Length: 325
Image 1 (cartoon, rainbow, N blue to C red):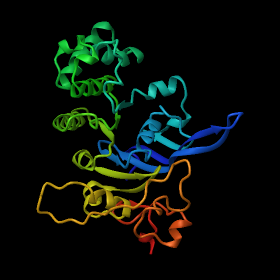
Image 2 (cartoon, rainbow, N blue to C red; image 1 turned 45 degrees about the vertical axis):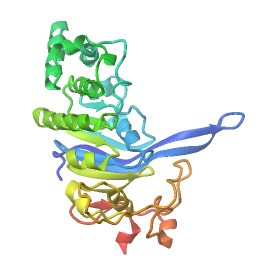
Image 3 (spheres, rainbow, N blue to C red; image 1 turned 180 degrees about the horizontal axis):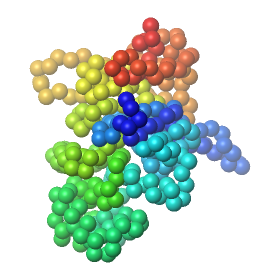
Image 4 (cartoon, rainbow, N blue to C red; image 1 turned 90 degrees about the horizontal axis):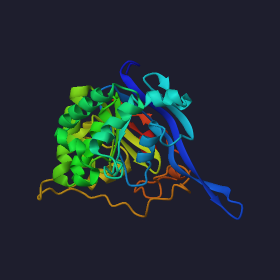
């Protein structure tokens, strides 16, 4: 992969939240929401990030935009180090990176119309005059499958799918290069999910967009992603091209996740991998491999040494001691 092809490069990203306690409110620990995550995103592709609730995937996405300030690590976007930017420089960079949030209702101001929500980022970045902004708003509503009169309505007057379309239109307003989509269809009915996913794919081709698509639904991720990263307890445990990961998963956690995906064949006889125990607390993660407390193939080394995130051929990365034997 050349530097030209790489739009986003995340290296050793960490996000820890302090835990305070006692009479004086001193720091007594920390929640390791994201712990040493590295990946790249190529221009024009969709990188899917999956995992259980609480694995740190949403925090990773928010840290890329610095909606959450990273504790450590490097985030390079178009050869610029985002962690070094502040004030006006970071605001300027946010024209290039936008976010679509999980809850389309919570991400819209209930006191402002849909049109005002779309126009707002144009005003913030000083793009166009008043009439040009209104024209752009109507154009974007049309692009996402809504009519111009929808711009006069308030969020409570839309369905969930329509609200998410407005969120997508708002993200597109400033013509970004990268969109981080944080579970954009998880709050929608299944019939509406496919419409929004197809819309996002069409917009990607139309505007030459790059996506980081965060979700917990493996079927949705397979539909839209070019590559897929799997997270567990704050760390990336596997990363590969979509078909390679789904057809030949290397990590035991990925294998367990994929075994739980329903298949549209009632006669299919497939082994279901049941993981024992619960996900450990990110405030007190296990030593060594964080998955060893639930892994059916655990070895002594897993309890002591954290596995490296290695390339096992064809840019198929995984962090597992079993693969190092």
